[in-house]
Image 1: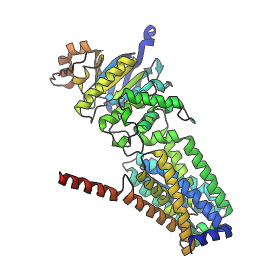
Image 2 (image 1 turned 90 degrees about the vertical axis):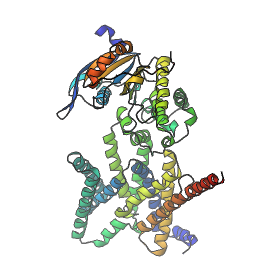
Image 3 (image 1 turned 90 degrees about the horizontal axis):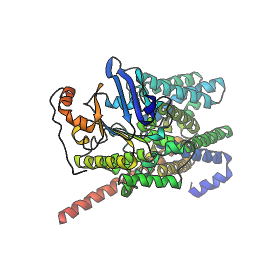
Image 4 (image 1 turned 135 degrees about the horizontal axis):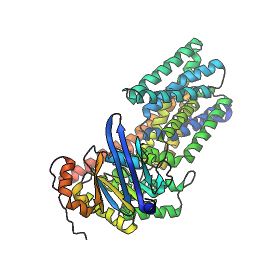
Length: 258
Length: 290
């Protein structure tokens, strides 16, 4: 194990979590390699978001451990390396008086530290992040005036602005129309390819996702499958039916990407 | 009395200078703190904490100590109590607020009545800015400097935790502590405003100027400056009306701020009702022409 520790971004070790007597996660063990683009799929209530919260140290599991870049999550201090985009619906205050630019610059606060303010080079970084999600022309719009898909891009930019090595997205396309979610996935793929970033995408949208990710993990309280996309597609029908409890055809969407 | 005569009186009477200075400081800090209160959806909480200060003030009077200490203690205790009740029962947050602050307020009224000085009670509840003493002025100034300092130092933290609490948590910001610190600041602001607007109407100074500024801008930093400015304008004109017509200063200050809110509500360039109606009428006419 020790010889490959440098190549692992996230290690989850025999993790169990329950709310009261309701089991949410049972003995989850997985390793996510640096530079991979993992799609974490599972039906509603399968514990996807809870697993992500445990990985980020927002929830404490009753059993097991999480390691980020080889460090136990409760001792992990390098939060600049980790970007997180949460489910839109339960998070931010839409009526907040802030422009898209200001929202993105909030992503730098961890780095800037207490008692300090943004410098010119920080502002350049904000512009760069806005350009990478193709939202620079909306920089001075109020965040509440943007569409759901555009807001989600701004939140990605906020996560990207501190140059994270790991980006975790929890159901980023919920409430976003199909067309924008397609271009959204394309953008993620580009980001992954260009920046050699580790990406974890949580979704229940199995079909579209397989066109973009390198690895797939299926979670329903336990890990049912974890491998690369090819292996997943070869075994997907049986996997899916065992997994969702009924027969599921995985639809393949081809959008002419390489 | 004209404004001119008011200014003349201002140069003549020291009590009026103290009153003006205190009201201006109160206008500024209420305006600033109010922005965070309304953006965090805590208007009701602001009302609750300001009322819950009363027993602390009463007990401080009884013990002969500065009411600042008693007020902060009962204010923060009430905030903790509200959190405790709503987290440990099926009682919702707004119910807990309603129960806790009215009880605290009632305790305060009983204590003050037993002390048999109803004049004091009237002033604590409704403000009497013209009777501001030197020591009150210094307390208000001290609280003002402290509050502005805290907001400047922790602006980023306040901004993130107000805008997106989940995000703040994932940055490792202690949301709970920020909440309770804000509650402590709220009690201090209430104490600072005791003489000017009184306990009952403090919440108006917290919410109305901030809400007015909210209608006028899309940026938090601008909103904070505007809100402070509106607070100051309300305080100065409120003081003028209070002095001229011998009215309770709390009431006149709040009325001026309510008037400014109404102006913004109807005529704000982006949010005003009048412009919106005008725009939609124009759009309809254009559609008809086509």
